[in-house]
Image 1 (cartoon, helix red, strand yellow):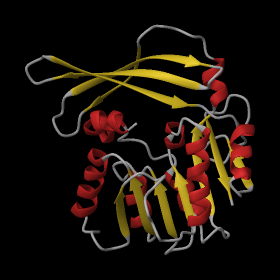
Image 2: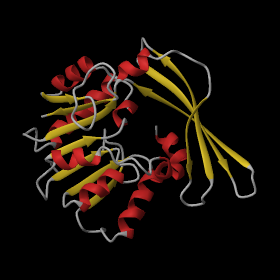
Image 3: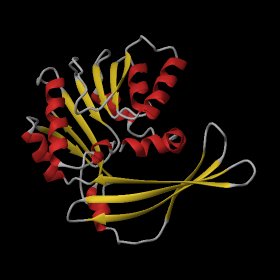
Image 4: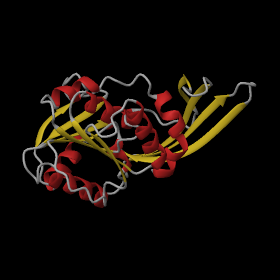
Length: 255
């Protein structure tokens, strides 16, 4: 996981420049100003910065230094160095964070990088302790609806996912992928291609593989219960629509 984000960190903000559909949901679920929030896999700071600017005290844990450096640079650029926004460099499975929180978030597919049950349970049990020492804090996990991936037809084709302008250079980038889904193990192996057109018309290709794991609702429910949580709701998208066949996301809220 770490080497993947080290490679694509320079593209990440440009690729996700318009991702904001989840922000109102998190504002609603952390409505009280001054709520203490923990973000697991805080990346380049998109969500952490938003919640801190809304008046919450936010701690982000990020394992990939290249992503974390970008988050810190954005934080410092808006003058929030000591104003309730803290970034921690380390692995959420081992990082010695002594704070407790009202809300913990595993945002935008981050939990998919925890491939085995041992690491999944270790993270969830740590989060249970971080949430007001196992008290009434909430946990939100944002995942895709696995049913959509499992219901799609297998193909070896390279798929054009999106095009975007790289913010720092203005270069056009075409993002493509080829993937293989192992339905028995619930893992997908994806190879991403970032084709960047430089100023002189040269194509610069970055190739980076990553493996992710899909979760179904019954499985995530059992994992959370085993870690001491109770499911409060499972939504099919950030508008809090029902989790049902064909919905795009699986937004899990637990206490």
